[in-house]
Image (cartoon, rainbow, N blue to C red; front, side):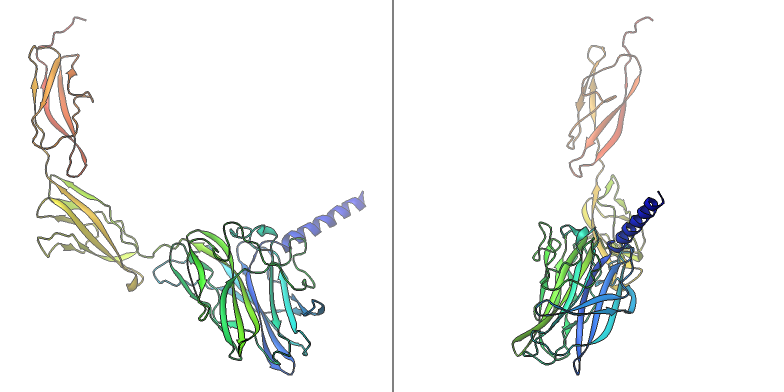
Length: 455
């Protein structure tokens, strides 16, 4: 019995450890190396994780595998974290509010390694599982990991090389329905020519072996995009595109969610391909509200008076400027929040509101609203009761267009009154000028001679 309890406890510990190890938190990474001379290289591994959706911290150490061109393991290296910290949620528009529910951390591992020249060169590899389960565009994402690697070329091609290094950290989010531009350019220590492209990131590791030691040898399989996503349709909307010469990335995403994409920068020296750097990253497409919005209730309708009362529903504005669109005067302006204005005549007008931002003078917003100033609608009709019965006839004598009439308690033109009393008569009018319903009392109707039945 005691042995069974110990065995059960051991199994639970293993399962809990495995669950913690493959918890979804990987959101991106890349690997770089720089030739220092005398067969010595400085290697930098950069890894990104989600602050919210992952339990385990960054691997410390991270296991780096070194393979030759035949996929034979040469050595493994333990790389320890050099720096670690949050990634700024920078936004490329000062007038949009960044999200508060996106949080990434970045860790860098920097170490030196001696690699003497060998035919075919080397591949340096790090693998980790798993990615966030909330990613939309990847199949079987809960069991999909990542491989970050770099290749050192054959010495017959060059005896010294450093792969390209991206200048800027990738953006953690993109605003839905907003044109997006980002400088994804890189630099090269030797000044090699660089060519950029959007690519599919690489898979690696799984939930059963989330931290391979050693990492698997090359070649590596890429992640599989879920239909309808592809390298040409990473997250819907205007395709993610990059200028192959400048590294400027553009897109206009149309769907909210988390999406994985890759950027490759290849290096050439005198037209000869040397190697590449691959950035693997998960981006969040989010709603980004404007920090200042001009808004008014529209249309503004006034019936029977030239005075219009305006309702200002703007937010995050410090001051306002109204132009009521009255062509009869230049003094049709106001700085009040909810002004009233008397127009010179009936008709339709366009009122303009400028909301001056409380945060940034470059983020003022403007809105235009429709104003209807309508005349008084007068309705007249005659009443006929020729035989002193409980049947009355109503005759419309109105000059304006009337769509419908309703008398008494909703009964139309011929009304039978069942008891002697005073009935207020109303007419409900849909005025053709504004399509606006108004209910007006017209006149009382007295029934003087209706015969009364005894109780």
